Amino acid sequence: MQSVSKITLSHDVIQSLISHHFGNDTRVKATQELTEGYFATAYRLDLADGRAWVLKVSPPPHVRVLRYERDIMAAEVATMRLLHERTSLPIPAIHCYDASRTLLDNEFFLMEFLPGQPLHKVRGEIAPNVQQRINRQIGGYLREINAIEGAAFGYGPESTPRFAAWRDAFDAMLMTVLQDGEDMDVELPLSYAGYHDLARQHYAALDEVRAPRLVHWDLWDGNIFFDIETQTITGIIDHERALWGDPLMEVNFTGYDPSSDFAVGYGIPVLDTPAQRTRRTLYSLYLFLIMVIECYYRQYPNNGQELWAREQLANTVDALRNGAHAEIKMHSVP
Image 1 (tube, rainbow, N blue to C red):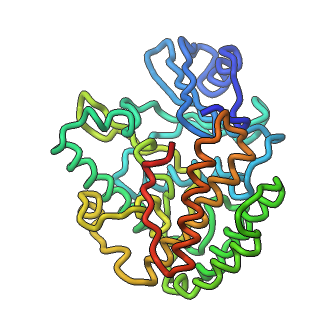
Image 2: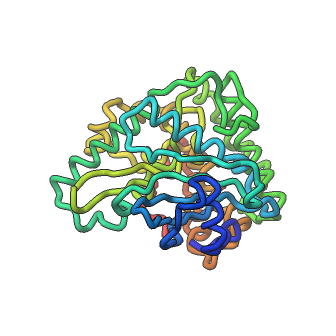
């Protein structure tokens, strides 16, 4: 996706990065920009010695980003290393992370290239019995992620505030994205105070969350790599939005079907109580506010995401007002 948060790197610039980190004898044979993402820049690098790497680059310092997106590359690297150590997930190995901004005006890291394609691109080519297996596997992967407990609630970057109570953390997160919207004069159906007041009416449900758990928050098919030839999941990517919070924040629990193969793989009952369903709807409110407001920062070439997110935001507001759970299918995002 085209976005002002992305940059273009020449072959010579990429070669200089590789020479610095691998030595002057290491040559870059070919580069290919990976355009699926919405935020960071990514390139596949094929080296003359046969190795392949992925270069991921943060937005330049002058580009305005949402507050929660500040310093998230460092958080992504830390999350990947944690998951590599503590889970069975296929996490790409990281060769280096450079936050010095001496070689580029941007932070960047190099990670191993994994075979396969984003799962959402090849779902239609996968046999039903294989789909059943991988959906259960995804559920199991998410359970492994959510089993990791942290010391406090909050976003991944060390520069962000930490909280002892989930209610306080979520309130700060919601207030932050509302401030982002006000900064860009984003017009919304309710006043900014109106969204905050509506959410606060349901904060009692947040008090059930006692332990900060690792939340990937973006484990959709586009961030899961699948190899058609081997019929296996080969990689889980894009951990930059990870946070310490309530596992019910995971986008996988929007439009959740307790009888699904994913639910079998996850293995823990969710959304069984009114409080759980209220929390899930609060998280949808937060997510769709982000998805509307970020469009004004990214300046996407079309308004498909904004229109869809505005519709989902309205549905979520109605659900909170009526005490219902918002039934939303995340795969409907254009």
